[in-house]
Image 1 (cartoon, one colour):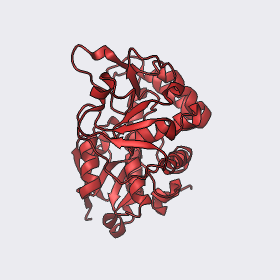
Image 2 (cartoon, helix red, strand yellow):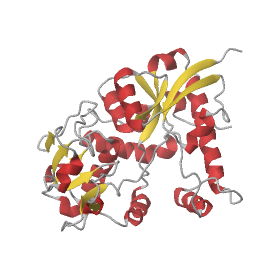
Image 3 (tube, helix red, strand yellow):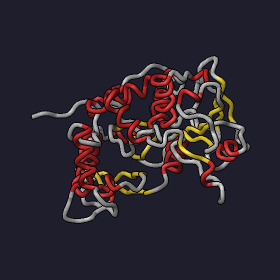
Length: 329
Protein backbone atom coordinates (compact mmCIF):
# COMPACT_ATOMS: atom_id res chain seq x y z
CA UNK A 1 0.00 0.00 0.00
CA UNK A 2 1.31 3.46 -0.87
CA UNK A 3 1.94 5.73 2.09
CA UNK A 4 1.69 9.50 2.08
CA UNK A 5 5.01 11.30 2.63
CA UNK A 6 4.79 14.53 4.61
CA UNK A 7 7.50 16.94 5.73
CA UNK A 8 7.47 18.08 9.37
CA UNK A 9 9.37 20.88 11.14
CA UNK A 10 9.44 20.75 14.95
CA UNK A 11 11.73 21.46 17.86
CA UNK A 12 13.59 18.72 19.73
CA UNK A 13 11.00 17.52 22.26
CA UNK A 14 11.20 14.20 24.08
CA UNK A 15 7.42 13.88 23.75
CA UNK A 16 7.69 14.10 19.93
CA UNK A 17 10.93 12.17 19.44
CA UNK A 18 9.35 8.70 19.14
CA UNK A 19 7.37 9.95 16.15
CA UNK A 20 10.46 11.43 14.50
CA UNK A 21 12.62 8.30 14.85
CA UNK A 22 9.89 5.86 13.83
CA UNK A 23 9.22 4.16 17.17
CA UNK A 24 5.69 5.55 16.78
CA UNK A 25 4.14 5.72 13.29
CA UNK A 26 1.20 7.69 11.98
CA UNK A 27 -0.96 5.20 10.11
CA UNK A 28 -0.59 5.62 6.34
CA UNK A 29 2.02 8.40 6.68
CA UNK A 30 5.80 8.63 6.40
CA UNK A 31 7.22 11.74 8.04
CA UNK A 32 10.36 13.55 6.85
CA UNK A 33 11.39 15.61 9.89
CA UNK A 34 13.42 18.80 10.23
CA UNK A 35 14.41 19.52 13.85
CA UNK A 36 15.04 23.26 14.12
CA UNK A 37 14.87 26.18 16.58
CA UNK A 38 11.31 27.40 17.01
CA UNK A 39 12.08 30.97 15.92
CA UNK A 40 13.30 29.71 12.55
CA UNK A 41 10.31 27.38 12.14
CA UNK A 42 7.85 30.16 12.96
CA UNK A 43 9.42 32.61 10.52
CA UNK A 44 9.61 30.15 7.65
CA UNK A 45 6.09 28.83 8.33
CA UNK A 46 4.49 32.26 8.66
CA UNK A 47 6.04 33.65 5.48
CA UNK A 48 6.66 30.67 3.20
CA UNK A 49 4.75 27.57 4.45
CA UNK A 50 7.78 25.45 3.53
CA UNK A 51 6.67 22.23 5.25
CA UNK A 52 3.52 20.13 5.04
CA UNK A 53 3.39 20.15 8.86
CA UNK A 54 5.15 22.43 11.29
CA UNK A 55 5.21 23.72 14.81
CA UNK A 56 3.62 27.16 15.06
CA UNK A 57 3.09 29.91 17.59
CA UNK A 58 -0.49 29.77 18.84
CA UNK A 59 -0.76 33.57 18.78
CA UNK A 60 0.49 33.92 15.24
CA UNK A 61 -1.74 31.11 13.97
CA UNK A 62 -4.81 32.51 15.73
CA UNK A 63 -4.02 36.01 14.47
CA UNK A 64 -3.75 34.83 10.87
CA UNK A 65 -7.01 32.88 11.12
CA UNK A 66 -8.79 35.89 12.62
CA UNK A 67 -7.69 37.94 9.61
CA UNK A 68 -9.14 35.43 7.12
CA UNK A 69 -5.79 33.82 6.26
CA UNK A 70 -6.67 30.11 6.14
CA UNK A 71 -3.61 28.74 4.35
CA UNK A 72 -2.81 26.74 7.50
CA UNK A 73 -4.98 24.28 9.41
CA UNK A 74 -4.40 23.63 13.11
CA UNK A 75 -4.16 20.29 14.88
CA UNK A 76 -4.92 20.18 18.63
CA UNK A 77 -1.40 18.92 19.34
CA UNK A 78 0.48 21.23 21.72
CA UNK A 79 4.20 20.47 21.92
CA UNK A 80 5.00 23.50 24.09
CA UNK A 81 3.12 24.61 27.20
CA UNK A 82 4.64 26.89 29.84
CA UNK A 83 3.24 28.86 32.74
CA UNK A 84 4.45 32.40 32.18
CA UNK A 85 4.37 34.17 35.54
CA UNK A 86 8.13 33.66 35.48
CA UNK A 87 8.53 35.85 32.39
CA UNK A 88 8.58 39.28 34.07
CA UNK A 89 12.12 40.63 34.44
CA UNK A 90 13.30 43.79 36.20
CA UNK A 91 16.60 45.31 37.32
CA UNK A 92 17.88 43.95 40.61
CA UNK A 93 17.93 47.48 42.09
CA UNK A 94 14.23 48.07 41.36
CA UNK A 95 11.80 49.24 44.00
CA UNK A 96 9.01 47.20 42.39
CA UNK A 97 7.93 44.14 44.36
CA UNK A 98 4.62 43.09 42.77
CA UNK A 99 2.97 43.09 39.34
CA UNK A 100 0.69 45.94 40.41
CA UNK A 101 3.79 48.15 40.62
CA UNK A 102 4.05 48.02 36.82
CA UNK A 103 1.36 50.70 36.45
CA UNK A 104 2.86 53.75 34.82
CA UNK A 105 6.03 51.90 33.82
CA UNK A 106 7.67 51.14 30.47
CA UNK A 107 7.59 47.44 29.55
CA UNK A 108 9.54 45.72 26.81
CA UNK A 109 8.00 42.89 24.75
CA UNK A 110 9.70 40.97 21.93
CA UNK A 111 6.47 41.03 19.90
CA UNK A 112 2.96 42.17 20.73
CA UNK A 113 1.81 38.91 19.15
CA UNK A 114 4.13 36.65 21.15
CA UNK A 115 1.98 33.94 22.72
CA UNK A 116 3.65 34.23 26.12
CA UNK A 117 2.99 37.97 26.21
CA UNK A 118 -0.70 37.49 25.40
CA UNK A 119 -1.18 35.24 28.42
CA UNK A 120 0.92 37.47 30.68
CA UNK A 121 -0.90 40.67 29.71
CA UNK A 122 -4.21 38.87 30.31
CA UNK A 123 -3.00 37.79 33.76
CA UNK A 124 -1.80 41.30 34.62
CA UNK A 125 -5.18 42.80 33.70
CA UNK A 126 -7.35 40.05 35.17
CA UNK A 127 -5.47 39.32 38.41
CA UNK A 128 -3.66 42.58 39.18
CA UNK A 129 -5.73 45.31 37.55
CA UNK A 130 -2.86 46.43 35.31
CA UNK A 131 -4.69 47.51 32.17
CA UNK A 132 -3.03 47.70 28.76
CA UNK A 133 -3.32 51.48 28.97
CA UNK A 134 -1.49 51.58 32.31
CA UNK A 135 1.83 50.62 30.68
CA UNK A 136 3.96 52.06 27.88
CA UNK A 137 4.88 49.08 25.68
CA UNK A 138 8.19 48.94 23.80
CA UNK A 139 8.69 46.22 21.18
CA UNK A 140 12.13 44.92 20.29
CA UNK A 141 14.48 41.95 20.31
CA UNK A 142 15.22 40.63 23.79
CA UNK A 143 18.97 40.17 23.36
CA UNK A 144 19.49 41.30 19.77
CA UNK A 145 18.23 44.49 18.16
CA UNK A 146 16.06 44.44 15.06
CA UNK A 147 13.21 42.06 15.89
CA UNK A 148 9.89 43.01 14.33
CA UNK A 149 6.28 41.84 14.46
CA UNK A 150 5.58 38.87 12.18
CA UNK A 151 1.82 39.35 11.87
CA UNK A 152 -0.38 42.44 11.64
CA UNK A 153 -1.73 43.52 15.02
CA UNK A 154 -4.38 46.04 16.00
CA UNK A 155 -3.09 47.53 19.23
CA UNK A 156 -6.21 48.87 21.02
CA UNK A 157 -6.93 52.58 20.97
CA UNK A 158 -5.35 54.40 23.86
CA UNK A 159 -2.55 51.88 24.33
CA UNK A 160 0.95 53.35 24.09
CA UNK A 161 3.01 51.01 21.92
CA UNK A 162 6.14 51.71 19.90
CA UNK A 163 8.73 49.56 18.13
CA UNK A 164 12.38 50.09 19.03
CA UNK A 165 14.40 48.18 16.42
CA UNK A 166 17.69 49.95 17.10
CA UNK A 167 18.43 48.49 20.60
CA UNK A 168 17.77 45.24 22.46
CA UNK A 169 15.34 45.16 25.37
CA UNK A 170 18.09 43.87 27.65
CA UNK A 171 20.30 46.87 26.87
CA UNK A 172 17.39 49.27 27.39
CA UNK A 173 16.52 47.69 30.73
CA UNK A 174 20.10 47.88 31.98
CA UNK A 175 20.33 51.54 30.90
CA UNK A 176 17.01 52.49 32.51
CA UNK A 177 15.19 53.23 29.25
CA UNK A 178 12.53 50.68 30.17
CA UNK A 179 11.51 49.36 33.59
CA UNK A 180 10.68 45.71 32.87
CA UNK A 181 10.74 43.01 30.20
CA UNK A 182 7.92 40.57 29.51
CA UNK A 183 9.44 37.72 27.52
CA UNK A 184 9.40 33.96 27.03
CA UNK A 185 13.15 33.99 26.42
CA UNK A 186 15.10 35.42 29.39
CA UNK A 187 17.36 38.45 29.07
CA UNK A 188 21.08 37.70 28.75
CA UNK A 189 23.08 40.56 30.31
CA UNK A 190 26.72 40.94 29.32
CA UNK A 191 29.49 39.27 31.32
CA UNK A 192 29.91 40.84 34.73
CA UNK A 193 26.31 42.09 34.86
CA UNK A 194 24.47 38.76 35.06
CA UNK A 195 22.99 39.63 38.47
CA UNK A 196 21.70 43.01 37.31
CA UNK A 197 18.43 41.50 35.99
CA UNK A 198 16.12 39.35 38.12
CA UNK A 199 12.58 37.97 38.00
CA UNK A 200 9.88 40.16 39.50
CA UNK A 201 8.34 37.00 41.03
CA UNK A 202 11.17 34.85 42.46
CA UNK A 203 8.73 32.20 43.76
CA UNK A 204 6.91 31.93 40.47
CA UNK A 205 6.08 28.22 40.81
CA UNK A 206 3.84 28.86 43.83
CA UNK A 207 2.10 31.69 41.98
CA UNK A 208 1.64 29.54 38.87
CA UNK A 209 0.19 26.62 40.84
CA UNK A 210 -2.29 29.00 42.46
CA UNK A 211 -3.14 30.50 39.07
CA UNK A 212 -3.97 27.08 37.63
CA UNK A 213 -6.03 26.10 40.69
CA UNK A 214 -8.11 29.28 40.34
CA UNK A 215 -8.49 29.46 36.57
CA UNK A 216 -7.87 26.01 35.06
CA UNK A 217 -5.56 27.68 32.51
CA UNK A 218 -2.41 25.74 31.55
CA UNK A 219 -0.94 28.05 28.90
CA UNK A 220 -0.49 26.55 25.43
CA UNK A 221 2.41 28.14 23.55
CA UNK A 222 2.66 26.17 20.29
CA UNK A 223 0.53 23.86 18.15
CA UNK A 224 1.06 21.78 15.03
CA UNK A 225 -0.29 23.18 11.77
CA UNK A 226 -0.52 21.81 8.23
CA UNK A 227 -0.88 23.41 4.84
CA UNK A 228 -4.54 23.58 3.86
CA UNK A 229 -4.05 21.98 0.44
CA UNK A 230 -2.42 18.94 2.07
CA UNK A 231 -5.36 18.54 4.46
CA UNK A 232 -7.98 19.14 1.75
CA UNK A 233 -6.50 16.39 -0.43
CA UNK A 234 -6.23 13.92 2.47
CA UNK A 235 -8.66 14.80 5.24
CA UNK A 236 -8.05 11.46 6.97
CA UNK A 237 -4.55 12.51 7.99
CA UNK A 238 -5.74 14.92 10.71
CA UNK A 239 -6.93 12.30 13.19
CA UNK A 240 -4.17 9.86 12.25
CA UNK A 241 -1.59 12.51 13.09
CA UNK A 242 -3.27 13.50 16.35
CA UNK A 243 -3.30 9.84 17.41
CA UNK A 244 0.37 9.40 16.56
CA UNK A 245 1.48 12.56 18.35
CA UNK A 246 -0.55 11.42 21.37
CA UNK A 247 1.10 7.99 21.39
CA UNK A 248 4.55 9.62 21.28
CA UNK A 249 3.62 11.95 24.14
CA UNK A 250 2.25 9.08 26.24
CA UNK A 251 5.46 7.12 25.67
CA UNK A 252 7.48 10.11 26.90
CA UNK A 253 5.37 10.35 30.06
CA UNK A 254 5.87 6.64 30.66
CA UNK A 255 9.65 7.16 30.54
CA UNK A 256 9.31 10.03 32.96
CA UNK A 257 7.46 7.80 35.43
CA UNK A 258 9.84 4.85 35.15
CA UNK A 259 11.52 4.49 38.57
CA UNK A 260 13.86 1.69 37.45
CA UNK A 261 15.90 3.72 34.93
CA UNK A 262 17.05 7.34 34.81
CA UNK A 263 15.69 8.39 31.41
CA UNK A 264 16.22 12.05 32.32
CA UNK A 265 19.37 13.27 34.11
CA UNK A 266 17.60 14.83 37.10
CA UNK A 267 16.52 13.30 40.44
CA UNK A 268 12.92 12.74 41.57
CA UNK A 269 11.47 12.85 38.07
CA UNK A 270 8.95 10.07 38.72
CA UNK A 271 7.71 11.86 41.84
CA UNK A 272 7.32 15.09 39.89
CA UNK A 273 5.39 13.22 37.22
CA UNK A 274 3.04 11.77 39.83
CA UNK A 275 2.49 15.21 41.32
CA UNK A 276 1.68 16.59 37.88
CA UNK A 277 -0.87 13.84 37.23
CA UNK A 278 -2.58 14.68 40.53
CA UNK A 279 -2.56 18.39 39.76
CA UNK A 280 -3.89 18.07 36.21
CA UNK A 281 -6.40 15.29 36.73
CA UNK A 282 -4.63 12.30 35.17
CA UNK A 283 -3.04 13.60 31.97
CA UNK A 284 -0.60 16.45 32.66
CA UNK A 285 -0.16 17.23 28.95
CA UNK A 286 -3.50 16.72 27.19
CA UNK A 287 -3.99 17.05 23.43
CA UNK A 288 -7.37 17.56 21.79
CA UNK A 289 -9.90 20.39 21.90
CA UNK A 290 -12.22 19.33 24.75
CA UNK A 291 -9.65 18.98 27.57
CA UNK A 292 -8.06 22.30 26.56
CA UNK A 293 -11.16 24.37 25.93
CA UNK A 294 -10.77 26.52 29.08
CA UNK A 295 -7.20 27.42 28.16
CA UNK A 296 -7.88 27.99 24.46
CA UNK A 297 -10.99 30.11 25.01
CA UNK A 298 -9.19 32.23 27.64
CA UNK A 299 -6.25 32.76 25.30
CA UNK A 300 -8.51 33.76 22.41
CA UNK A 301 -10.37 36.20 24.66
CA UNK A 302 -7.08 37.80 25.74
CA UNK A 303 -5.84 37.89 22.14
CA UNK A 304 -8.98 39.65 20.90
CA UNK A 305 -8.94 42.17 23.76
CA UNK A 306 -5.29 42.93 22.96
CA UNK A 307 -5.73 43.25 19.19
CA UNK A 308 -3.68 40.16 18.33
CA UNK A 309 -6.84 38.52 16.96
CA UNK A 310 -8.89 40.81 14.73
CA UNK A 311 -12.21 39.20 15.64
CA UNK A 312 -13.62 37.25 18.57
CA UNK A 313 -12.94 33.52 18.22
CA UNK A 314 -13.51 30.29 20.14
CA UNK A 315 -11.46 27.11 20.35
CA UNK A 316 -13.47 25.29 17.66
CA UNK A 317 -12.62 28.04 15.15
CA UNK A 318 -8.96 26.94 15.14
CA UNK A 319 -9.35 23.30 14.13
CA UNK A 320 -11.12 21.21 11.48
CA UNK A 321 -14.29 19.44 12.64
CA UNK A 322 -12.65 16.03 12.16
CA UNK A 323 -10.56 16.58 15.32
CA UNK A 324 -13.08 18.53 17.40
CA UNK A 325 -14.33 15.51 19.35
CA UNK A 326 -12.87 12.22 20.46
CA UNK A 327 -14.31 8.97 19.16
CA UNK A 328 -15.97 6.90 21.88
CA UNK A 329 -16.87 3.21 21.58
